[in-house]
Image 1 (cartoon, rainbow, N blue to C red):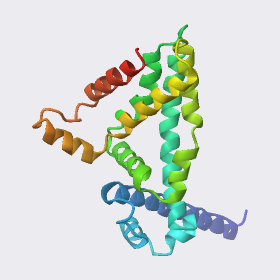
Image 2: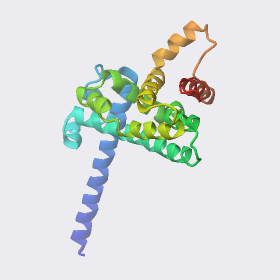
Image 3: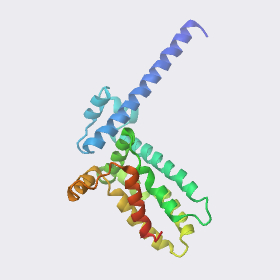
Image 4: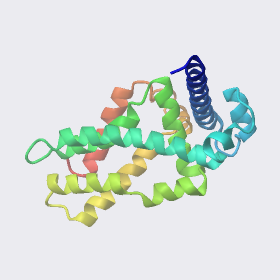
Length: 218
């Protein structure tokens, strides 16, 4: 390889690294802004300003603002579901499997996402459920593959319940799990005069698990 070729390769590598850096900054900027302010309040200009890139960068790297938001949602949802799947596999080791362990696999990952980055990701996912663009809400509504695994696991663990009953109870359990936004906890703190707060996430997980497991008689 000639010196010219080496220099050209280095320049291309530098350009690729810069592109990836800008793309990652856009991802994190959009996720953080929407977690803090909501989907409707955040514009492309807000995102690019936060990321320190020019206004055309979203279209260059993602094609559109909606595509960027979809990428964030799919990335974070996949991370969440991978954690759930790992815990679910461990829960199915016993014979018969423990329904409480199966339910813990469902609720533990989002409950314990407590680092700054994870908290932001969870707030983005929570907002996406109620505020996200139609494309994201359609995914949430229609893609139930990861939930089917929990239905099948609970059928093994609770053979006295038919599938319809398990699905109903899982549906109600998800409602409990999703009712955990910052606004929900502000109301909880007011209602309890400060006695009930979500800061101790392990304690919160225990309370959630007790409540959800009771719904399955577990």
